[in-house]
Image (cartoon, rainbow, N blue to C red):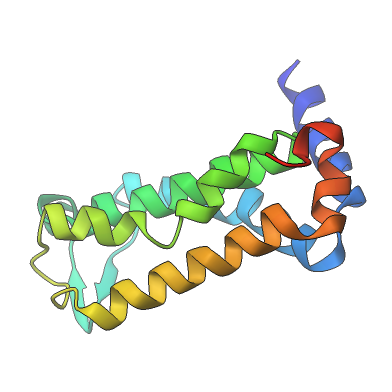
Length: 149
């Protein structure tokens, strides 16, 4: 059952435009792997030049911010591969959510979030929105339910 779903989603990506397919397939594979590496203490992480232990990563907000980004990328990629038009919103929110997490829970190792960071995230989200909601080839890939939603 699960392997059939995975195979179907992977086959669905063949109908995507090349650049979108590359990004979605990458999110489908890389984001879950990095999420596992983040959750289990297998490697040490470097944040803004600081070597951070697993415990330090999760005692600050950086672990949650990174995990939210990876989870959104994985869910959005798999959702888009499953032709779920609502999953596009996960990918649109992807650049903004880590800054919301860092604003709510300031991190030990991260630099303070400034206006340029927020503006860059909002601009990136706007580009994602235009590409995922307005491009005809993406809407055609999603079928009738992807048009106008």
